[in-house]
Length: 318
Image 1 (cartoon, one colour):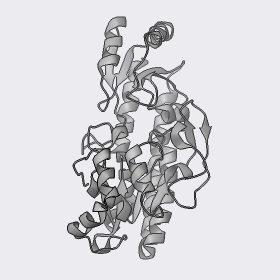
Image 2 (image 1 turned 180 degrees about the horizontal axis):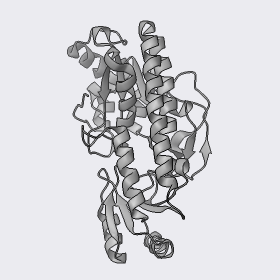
Image 3 (image 1 turned 120 degrees about the vertical axis):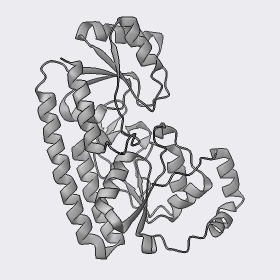
Image 4 (image 1 turned 90 degrees about the vertical axis):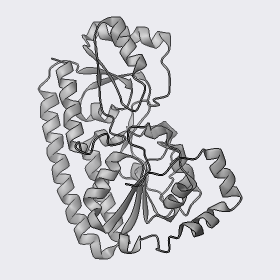
């Protein structure tokens, strides 16, 4: 995966306005077309679960660039000039609109016809917890809905991941017709694996009686909760940068007492301070959940992390 140093957006836009983008592109060389030439289709992603799908379905016929930095908050993604050009010149860019402003801006300033908007493929959950579907867009980058209110963390549902995999295979097959059969076969294999994972998680969560409440540092697990009938309570909302009010902390203490919560979960890519302090104040444990925005270990792929998160949640209810 390719990771390039970030540049502040103000500097980036200034350079773009002066026409420096074209000059930098020439300096970088890149004579291959958007399909990627001998390197395969150039595919750009900005979080690990989408990269997982690209790698498994595209195989050697794609060249992957993941813009996210491992262990960093993917919501706050910043892009260098080179990365913006990579987005605009790629054969395919996978986008969750509203998730990363920098990527949305880069797409909006490019051709827009090289984008797979995953919110046009699966039903999204809005930030207020309601599930809804988007209409597919003509340009690939935007549609008639406002995306700012969507919860972007859709990868915590293996079934949605399988649907995205099928759409990815179809789109790659349009770009590379010679590889269409291979993409379709790989997507079918991925779907089989994800459906098996889904059944395994459903059985594991289903074996626990009661409300199955879990408290997280920010509300990144609504899709997991919806899929397996869990009760997520976020200290903060969908945005990991939002700070809870004193009133919110008092409400959480009440939830902990009334529902017998034993553990408060925090994430590697967000500050654990509030979660750990709350846990200490009420005398319960704090534990880490992997939000899967980036891959924290090469030894732990998407299914492995989903299983490990499930294990920790189930243990918190025992």
